[in-house]
Image 1: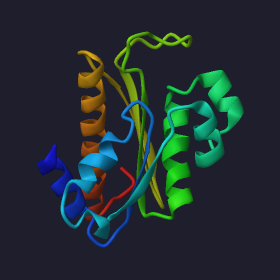
Image 2 (image 1 turned 60 degrees about the horizontal axis):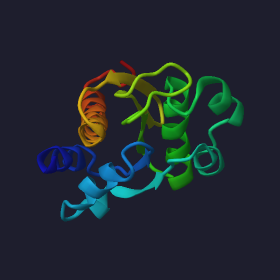
Image 3 (image 1 turned 90 degrees about the horizontal axis):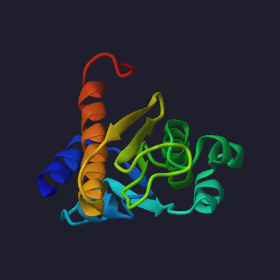
Image 4 (image 1 turned 90 degrees about the vertical axis):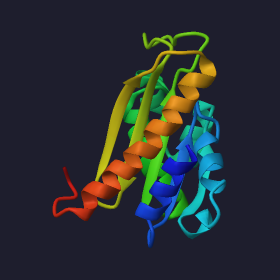
Amino acid sequence: MMSLCCDVLKALEGKTLSTAESCTGGMIGSALTAVPGASGVYKGGIISYWSEVKENLLGVDAALLETKGPVSEPVAKAMAEGVRRALCTDVAVSVTGLAGPDADEFGYPVGTVFVGYADAQYSVVKEFHFSGNREQVRKKAAEAALRLILERSMLCRSTDCKK
């Protein structure tokens, strides 16, 4: 994961990054800060394991959490947009998912993960279904978030950032 973090930090040179993590519990922030010089890009993150934290610190609407569940596409989007606002960064990524051992009451099985991305012009969420044990799902989710940042930063180097 170190190589992926280095690529992300290099791709975001001159910009700032924040993270909102639920099921990964700070894994993304930890991986990024393991890279010397990460503070030039990575501003910080919010670990929002409980819905109350998603609502109170990230500004996720309580009704959205209640109707869609904390593990959902709209919540991942709101988390990314919320941490970007809260920490005043150029780019933000969020992760919410079910690492196990149990599914949720909204019908999502273990391994379901939503990764959100937000910048000033664009936000997107990708849904993943990972297999493996709890730690494997968490690691795959963190890597997917880092890859999404890298994908968006590479796309934004081209002429059309909104794709």
